[in-house]
Image 1 (tube, rainbow, N blue to C red):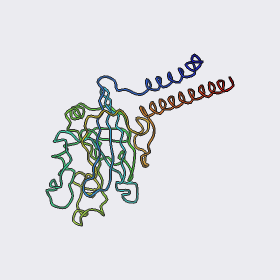
Image 2: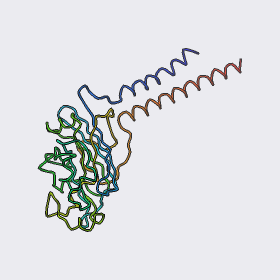
Image 3: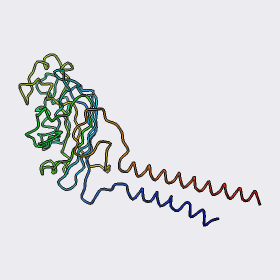
Length: 264
């Protein structure tokens, strides 16, 4: 009977071990960076972002919600970047040197720096694409995930702890009256609200290896972020299932043993 019990349980324990072995692990030299995005300029938005670096390849996964929803009757284009080369922080209210009640992109630059990488949905990821609204995140809530070649300056800033993710674009109606009439400091043909920062977060080294999201390279999905089981979560679920199955097998063996004992 002991042999039969071991025969039933052994494959289940092997399943659990296989599930653990299948959980993802970071390769030597790979690094992940994470930031919780905090609101600026009266924004009520929030979000989180992870940058996983392997060699010169970076996979950026981001979930944001609560941003300005529309612009000119269409989904609001939120340009976003990894800013580098400064203090690696988000600006304080005192950064509003003009006194108009809004921290513009240039006013915030002493804290977070210039554009190192544009988090575009397709094509160019260099600073040259920094104000291209056609490849911006769209709407009030979206999930962004894309893999691209990381430039050396941004890679160095990530390692130094001075890389900052900034998501731009405010609802003009939430700005002080004077600021609503001001042109953008980056693109004068646009209003100040269009390019001013709404979310900001410093990227710091992280032990996490994955965040919920779609497949790498898919760009922006114009929908609220949804939670999915990926990576280590799948391994843990499979392991938990294996342990439950092992318990069920052991219970079945005990029932049969008990039944035979009662007959005896």
